[in-house]
Amino acid sequence: MVYLSRIYTKSGDAGETGLGDGSRVPKNAVRVTAYGEVDELNTVIGLILIVPEVSEAVLLRGIQHDLFDLGADLCVPVAPDESTGALRITPAQVERLEKAIDRLNEHLQPLRSFVLPGGTAASAWLHLARTVCRRAERSVVTLMQTETINQQSLIYLNRLSDLLFVMARHANDGGNGDVLWVPGQSR
Image (tube, rainbow, N blue to C red; front, side, top):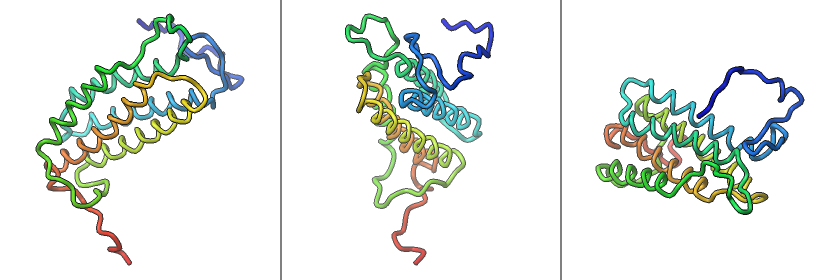
């Protein structure tokens, strides 16, 4: 459990921050960027949850908890013997996303064009979350080019962006209200 008695520590005033293993790194380190973008994604999902017509609130709240787990996973470098007891994203968390994708996608019509972000407010916010998720995923890929990470972290973000896309379509009257791209329309 987390216990915070003080919010400011002054330990980051020189541009460094502490990782979960106690090591110090610059605040612009790739690892910090990666879990910072996961935090941003979690915030966007929090905004989605206040949109009146949003469905799947329980699923989204669970994802927010998973994203805190993911941030904790990324905050603690993988140890060679991995005996740290660090919180790691698991295949079961990825599987929950896959089941949700299958359940929601089952009722959607196949796509015949790319979907423009928009339609309902809920759909637009879900598309924003999808793009933030993809950015976080790219940062995790950058991190894994130089450091070992829990591969489930990357898989989780990949599935989550797919789920957010399906949820955005679902929020547009089951895809019937999707705004479709018309190539060359504004020439």
